[in-house]
Length: 172
Image 1 (cartoon, rainbow, N blue to C red):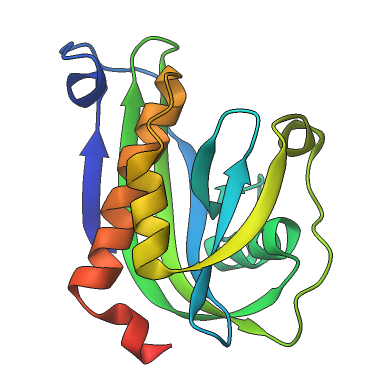
Image 2: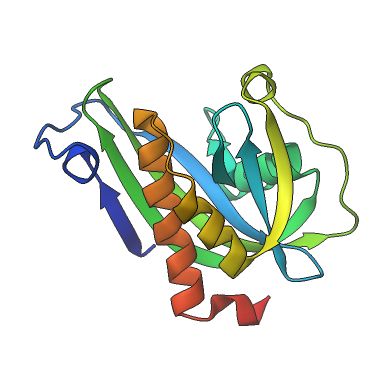
């Protein structure tokens, strides 16, 4: 899978410090609906947007994980169209790192009810649907003061820029 971006404290705080922790494995999707809008999870308590996705459970393969995460966070079954690439994040301050595999997908069937975790509920998570250019604009415009959210923002910008630059949304 193509490497899309590495995000470190250098990008956020200017520090050369790097995490030494083993990376958490996660997945995300640029999920298109039949109107060609993409799903964004909006964390209203933090005013932050993110693509739908999350951690890969122990023993779970990447494709099973992304379909599960899409269902939980968007209420939709999906068809995986292809791989976009991976991002790597090194957060020195809490000594955490993450390798996130990103996919392009489309909704299959009707949109259903979200199945959010307790954490997502406490963050005020809701799923909203926007044209991809508007989604990128929203992410760029909402620069949270939270350290972790700054990594998320740069990650999502890299992924959506890849889709837009290479016109990948035309295959959906």
